[in-house]
Amino acid sequence: MKAVNRYIFCDIDGTLLYAKGSGRPAFAAAFFDAFGIEIRMDHINFAGATDIRVLEQLVRENAVQLTPEKSALFFARLPVYLDENLTKDPPLVFPGVGTFLERVSSHWKLALVTGNIRETAYLKLKHGGLRDYFTDIGGFGDDDGDRNRMAALALERAGNPSGSFLLGDTPSDIEAARVNGITSVAVCNGQFSREQLEAEAPDLIVDSFEDAAHLFRELGV
Image (tube, rainbow, N blue to C red; front, side, top):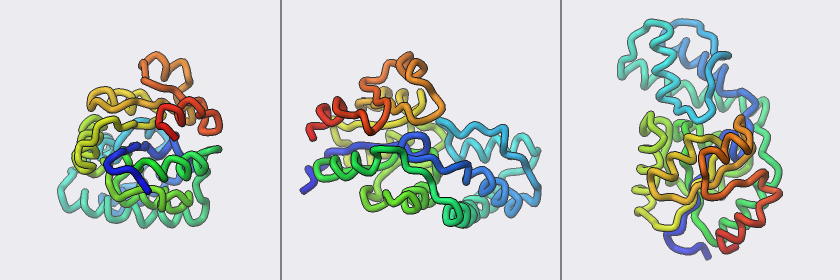
């Protein structure tokens, strides 16, 4: 049985899985539906970003007006295109992730702190075969553009548990954990090297979920 109110918060992209760039064409297609403009996405860096901030950047770059109606249309279409893309080419789940989640889920509740909007976050987990490990609690890219605030919202929705952990692959994840009093775990699966992540002084660092004995010890599993 899972312990009450013990939470591990996880980022998705670059931490648990690699979506193989499926979000870029989904963003472009949803942007066209909402604004009628064909755009390029190859210059966008999603590492540590939030979907709201990426949309705001695209709006500025293309000199269009972001109305509530167009924003709603964009975020309604984004999951449709992402689902199509992930169905054709499922994400790559990083080595050891399934074993890690299976082991900790018996003792901890699992939640999300991710720059993805809620619907696309769970689509990625579903297509990666990871959805059943996670609660519906989290902080998402359609909650707030600031990752620190997203982590705060996730904590609030979880009942403000103490002793929580936040796993992520970017300096933004480490900062969000630090600001909110969460133990930060840097995971070296993404764009940032071990050296770059170490420079941000995370509480723990994991090269891979296949080499995470020290993390299991910290989690008491």
